[in-house]
Length: 262
Image 1 (cartoon, rainbow, N blue to C red):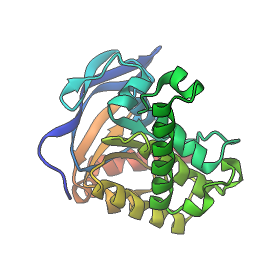
Image 2 (image 1 turned 180 degrees about the vertical axis):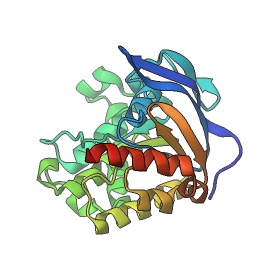
Image 3 (image 1 turned 30 degrees about the vertical axis):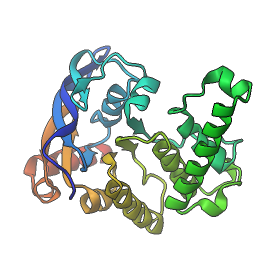
Image 4 (image 1 turned 45 degrees about the horizontal axis):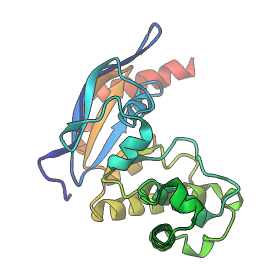
């Protein structure tokens, strides 16, 4: 593990209510730079809601989110991406009519400085920026193993490869923290193993990862530390071995399975 002691991302006393439902209740934890943090819990625990608060899709009712020591609450999503916090989604959200390469380039444009008129008028600095974005997108596709698919239409790719395109697109924004919402959903065992290898490779490039995932074998294999939510509350946090042996965590999962069976 390459993590250091300073938290790059800090969630402090975050609460979120939807009508009469307390979706998040006083959630606090820290993610040091260089870590893969797992965020797990039964269905309805509040994991995706927390991602939405961190990335600016939802406004919290209480608490603060800090990135690199500075609060990011109240900023809109594209500003948060520009600061260095990117995400992928539970449901693949590619531009289906675009090529794989074009999709990844969209992620790179978040960091672009040419502006609208620079792009429209094809000004020299805009053309240079476009060339850099194109070259970076090809490098990222090579990184995720899809360089040979660059000119394919995204919708034509198998689901597992679409997931990899989405990861490459998120990386194109040059994040310091990448939040992944169930990246293994819909993948077979071979694809899930490859995903695990890719997550470790991403961490080795210096990107900090926060992973929401139902595949426990993947989570336990790649994560340095795990936070467990249950019904909007923080249930436990610690290294994977501790979490696996925690009676409260086992009770939460077994309870949800028993409930689902009735």
